Image (cartoon, rainbow, N blue to C red; front, side):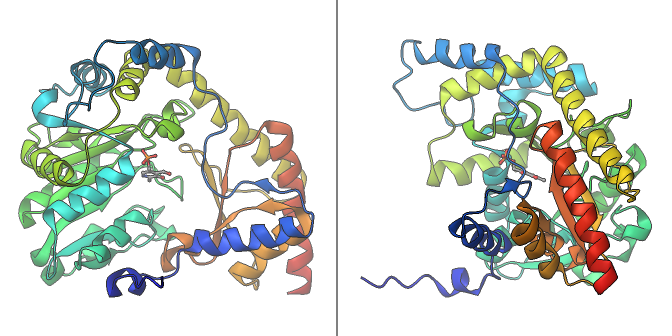
Length: 394
Ligand SMILES: Cc1ncc(COP(=O)(O)O)c(C=O)c1O
């Protein structure tokens, strides 16, 4: 039976990762073995304590029932402890937090809960795809916030036109940033909170990489600039900081009205997040002091291995001090897709073209640090050699 998708769904721009899948599929069909540094899917193992907590919870009486809609008490306690320990923020978790099956679904949910036709969502011009796609899906409009290399990829909030600010319901910010690896200091959040208050918008801070900072740097939180949770909702993810991407668990913390709105939306379309997975996340958060440094050290070491392999091959790259990505310029004179395809076809290395993150990402590509160091070093050597060759012939 031919099933027509809605006009809205059909109107979404092509998903770049689907095109990347096509290129990978074609290469594999030709017998190629690929090193996939495209999607940021963690390869580091889940800590044994987290697995044990998950297993123990599965044996709890009552585990067969639906989970509590908003969150398990054990997770709420752990979220409150984590926010206090890490960021000095005191919250009333059952009222101001919500368990999520990943930050992504929560971000889509809050957009659906607050926005409709005629509304605007302010989105960084280099963006994690769900920000814009969830907005378009509910018939609202996206307006891009300038995000330039010349400003170290810090959003230019002053450039937002007054009319857009007036119609905006949500402003999204994401630091440490996927894909650029950029970080901001506290003063950025002070400005963002001032903007949100002045224009009556929700400041949606996507903090998925807040724990992946290196070299003694620390990522401040939006909530540190909005201690009363006046305008801010922060999204946290256990996917990268604890390698729990496959278990689908995250949470949001912040303005109680926004939390209520998201909870109301989710109640209509789902049943909350698996209790055992929430208990595993509670274990992870209460053991963050021992678990997170190991993850950070692994990604930092991978970053350094790749940077030095690039340097040895004659390419001095800009090294980020956060996230699990490298954001590098496509060789001058070379088309973005031609570059990505050449790496797949000739070198068996998959990277993500910057356009996967919007037009603002044109001219760049992203490497995910999701393989061991020898593999990453070899990939860097191959990429650098291909770069030299393509620049010579461009
Ligand atoms: C910026 C950003 N936000 C959110 C997510 C999704 O997190 P989760 O796995 O918790 O849905 C990702 C995943 O790559 C991301 O890069």
